[in-house]
Image 1: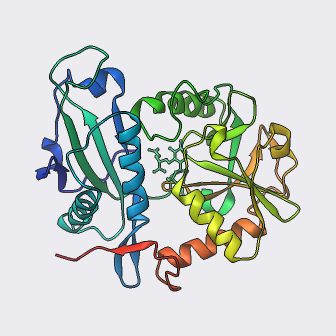
Image 2 (image 1 turned 30 degrees about the vertical axis):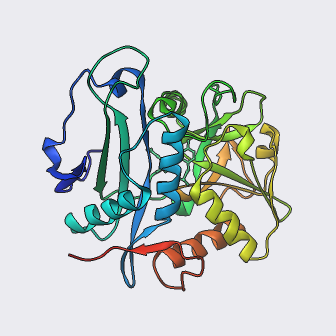
Length: 309
Ligand code: PPE
């Protein structure tokens, strides 16, 4: 799908026209995956555009940088402000936001620390991640033959460019097999996550999700959904999940900034529950979309308004 270009990209503190935001081909990140990034959404709420969980995403960006010993030449507040300004500058009401810090061009070789660190912020319109009908009808997925990284190989908690070579293998295999997405197991064989989403499983009214120790990215949507589920009176447990627990689940859904809350209707061609969006998934989706659209009060302070230029 071609991108919906916007006008400007924030590049090291300057607004650069979209088509001119370029880098050198010998940039370190291009060769060795040495970038860290975020995916954030801005929603068009009843009270104007607002960014969802801005400070949580900026915090994770800085944590990813810290893990990879990458020094960002900004403070978290400056990055948050730059994100809001980039949305306003592009006159967008709802969009996807991609801050990306990367090691640039100066010398090649694996040791990255002599290369300059750049920060860019791009924003563009991006609709439903797994297809238009996915949010209502659910998606068909398969367990991937590719596993997530072992704990002492790559730091799963960092959202780093290089980690997404693993996600690409999962995603391409899923597409080849006719699935909308793949679910990766961790190195011990327990359910970890999708190529770009966390996963939740409902069993007898209790909601389960893999713990941070199952090589997942600590999703911000995941945290919000845990909060919302508890608000609604459900018990949520972070627990190791086996492959067969997926097959016999009453409901399964993905969470993620891009995927939002997407129901899963089959795994490995085995129908989950009645094969359509389940009641708990429906309630969580409805609560989530009411908050991000401003229809109910933002009781957890998840929305940051975008100042209109
Ligand atoms: N796991 C992975 C591996 C992941 O990439 C994401 C986000 C999540 C879990 C969910 O995290 P959060 O967005 O904080 O709830 N994936 C981002 C990138 C997707 C892409 O295709 O690019 C996203 O959803 O923005």
